[in-house]
Length: 258
Image 1 (cartoon, one colour):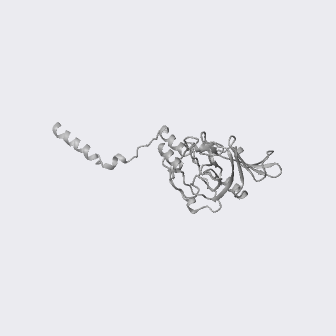
Image 2 (tube, rainbow, N blue to C red):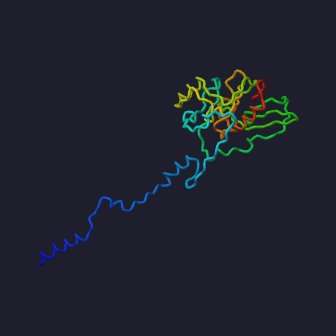
Image 3 (cartoon, rainbow, N blue to C red):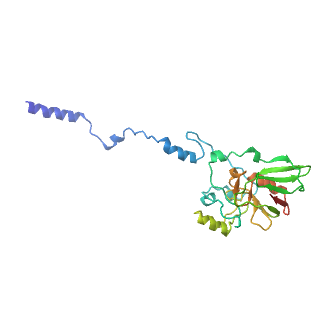
């Protein structure tokens, strides 16, 4: 009797259980938990803290800006640019290394354009550049000057002298000299031999060429570097500031670098 009942009970139990399918294991999706230690560094690289979303700000368009200036590109080679070398080497504009944008984008108000008193001996219309305090002055009549914040030569690339503006250019192209290309290649950084003018170009919106040198007063694609010693000798300004200066001075303007 027991031999007959036990198989029958077992069969009934089996019949009452619905057949399993491959999808049953995915009936409820398991929770996915990402450690903050893993996610935070990536979010910080985007320029904001975890849990916060920062809206992209619209970029101001400048007069006569090339169409290519409004295109988005990786331009990794330009962003990796930075100067180096000995003081007697040929020097030109350099782009500072990437910094923490969340902090460095906060430009000190002292570097914004403003009218200040001037009691020096230079005539109105003269440009004076203080490479210690990182200011550019445009001397005006009546004992005043228009002061702008600038980026200047990093240690080893400082210079001083008097020149005249020999050429002006809107949205200048950029051809780094052979010395800079070789220097950066030795540091593992590949520079482009040529870059067309535009918002991604390290020379920015305008350029004032100084004498027969490779130095320029020019804009920048890294405005957070203003007020710092960051270049390979050139004087960099915010694009809106160099546009203003460009319109106020002409070829032949005296430039004193101290």
